[in-house]
Length: 65
Image (cartoon, rainbow, N blue to C red):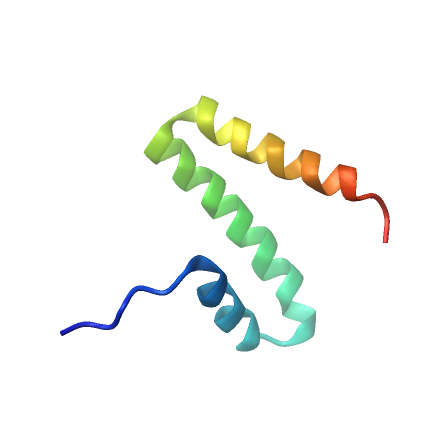
């Protein structure tokens, strides 16, 4: 039998753990871009745009650190 599926957060955390601190931000930027492109393919431009908009809105509403 194959390995049990893991949640997305665990997959990303493991991938980040294999990168140097200086490479982590670029990895996340590329992950966001690929994720948005995948959503376009799976759900269409409107759904992908909405997801990206909500993400951007969440970032903006958090404010500056």
